[in-house]
Length: 420
Image (cartoon, rainbow, N blue to C red; front, side, top):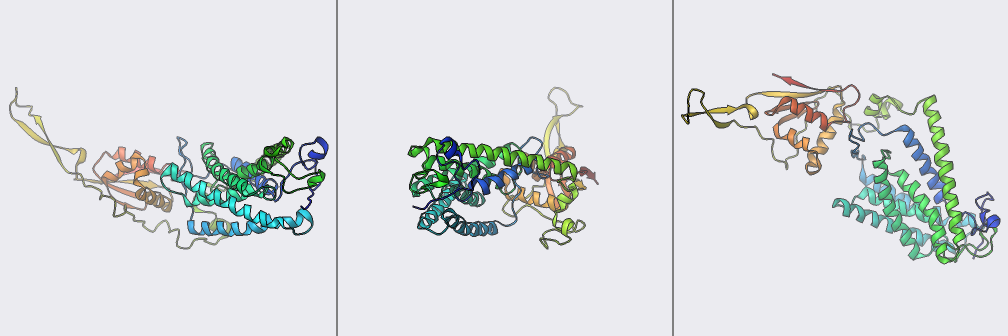
């Protein structure tokens, strides 16, 4: 078995100085690469704050979908392929040259990534009724991140378990960050931060003593607490605490100072328009954004029932001129009168954002809020920033539209009623 040496920092010497296993052990960088980056990202996200439209006033999150899920899946597999060089290639630094442990490292890397993807997919399937491909991708990356630190020190069974726990942790972490209003668009904090820390901890649990003789200058191979060395677990926990204090704490101070000095956020109107054109002068997605003056017309998909035109409803009421059960007359109730059209107009909002929000509501009616069904019941047509209704109470419709697009309108936007 090959020997390995740390960089000589105080964490690596915890075994020599205090008898805590082999000191802090992080074979290919679950902590120094992934957890460090994820915790820095967490600090930045806290200081920056969530995107416009991510959270409603009641705190509930809105889903802001990515542009292209197939491309995200392709990128995940490219990353997974590169991880074999990332983990297995670390044998060059660990021993000054290649060794036969590279085969074990490649195998456990593959197993952890697969188990992470499967657990994340089944978790979302159980929670929502459908396996979420984007979360399955994050589960695969979570397994890869988690196995990075212990990849040289564990076998196949432990790798599957480490990846599976990482797949569960990434789902849980995403939900918790949403609940705490930390806006992490692609789940990077959960994948790299949460699962990077789990990878560091897993060395102290699952290292089986088959590799790492004289690692960090300590006799014998690296073993976790399940194989008799509780000191290794203490060393790994010390490393985790150090990562939290250093990466998260110092990064938060850095971003806070930077925000005070030059500011981290662009103006709201630039954020709503997108940073590509204001920052670089080049449109990233040609044809994706329409000019505001171009009318946007989008009706619900054909498989939804057509918007009903309300009918006249007749009821029987006693005539004022009759007494004691004399004749009654029919009167038309104007609650659902089909005689007049009126419009709910959204002023000052980006028509493209309004259109995308309405499209998403139309394609997911079962998940839409009650206001959607109330609005759709009386809707005749929708044109960019104008909803045309027949029937219903105009003020009630205005409030429903306002609630539907809350968080999507932008600063200074107003919702008003126009009648003929």
